[in-house]
Amino acid sequence: MLHLETLFRKWLNEVSTPVDSHTLIEAAEIVPSSLAMKQLSQLATYIDTSVSEIGYSVDFTKPYADIRSEYMQKSLIPLCQSVQISEKHQGLSYEKGSSEFLKYMECFLKMVKAECVFAKKILSNPAQRSAALKTTIQPSLVEFTTAGQQLVALAKRLPYSESVFVFDILEKYECDCMATWKQLLRDNELDLPDMSDLMQQVIATAIKGINSFVEDVKGRRDTSAMVNLSSDGTVHEMTSNALNYLKRLFTWRDMVEPLLIAIGDGGWNQPIASADIAYHKIKFGDEPSSLGEALLQKFLVDSLDQLCISLQTKSRGYKKPALATIFLLNNYNYILRQIRSPPLNAIFDEATEVKFGKLVKKQLDTYQESWKPCVENLMDVTYVRGGTIKNALSNADRQMIKDKFKNFNTEFDEIWRTQTSYAVPDLDLRSQMIRDVKNVIVPMYGRFLDKIPISPKIMQNTSNMTRIAWNGF
Image: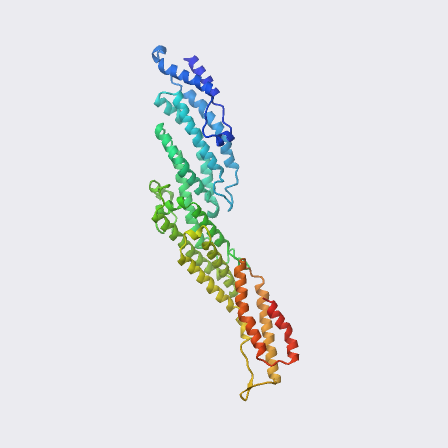
């Protein structure tokens, strides 16, 4: 008995050299040395067929688990460590498929699959094999799920916009790993719930991110309208984060739609406790459903409606009406540009685009109103005396004209000086705003000059104002 166990341990150790990470990642399957494997198989066959000769049944479950569990852990530990030190999960620049945990998951499953095949060749007794496999796999499974739980904890601490990697983890498991994992558990009669427990935590965290996003676009995280308002009226961080997040959700729509079905229409408006999520009803990997697509579209539209309400509230934090208008114009235009572009243009309908087009047009019209003080000084003035146009101006007339030019120049200069500190990042929008104002003021300025008889002296005094009026645009 002692000799058999010594021989078993010796040959088992020979085929249990840890696999390096590169081989583990690149190899299609893990295959032990053929010579050592042949020796082990012969020993296993001898033990299995010589029970009557030996006089007792040999159970090598413990030595098997001792050696192979250490082999699995040492093979996988570099991948586990790479997850812990990776910074790829931080920030808004996370790229789909870049998580080190995805490689770890893939290699862990590859190791488990190889181990089940290996155990079947060595341990012929099903009950002993199942017990040995469970004891062998469990330590590596604990390390794997611990790494996953650390990422879940990180996602909970991060803003919703930086926690989208949980959808990547969920997609990797549901699309590439779950079927194989569950098949291995069934075929080898293994009871290892840790993986399912981890994925439930990932699902709960993904849903929490959706709820946090809705809370953010509703403005409930801000203590006042002035929080994070820029001094130049540019696109608000909340707007850019919200649209980026919606695009990210669309990237993982196959994961998002089943989650929206699970929480129900409007369920995104209130937090849901993990215990209240019906995990068993969430079906990933099915064919796209009309319900899932409809809920995703409704969720996106609801989110933009809430975002608009929050933006209007924030705009009231600006003391200058023109700056508030610039702020709304920048944000509405940014939203319109995003929903017209891939990937969001595939989900938003024409009605949403028309709605935001009208919001942009309304703010453009409101912006023109900010130039009203200039325009009022250029209102059509014709000097008539006795039914004919006056060719000569009285001193009072000349003074009034001078005052109008002066007032126009003062108002123009004040508006121009103030608005040069405002920002309109979209060059097309900026050009349109300038063109709209120019199309009103410049012709009116020209008509004003044409309809008033101006002496050379007055013309000389106003030439500089004319230059300013044109060059200001």
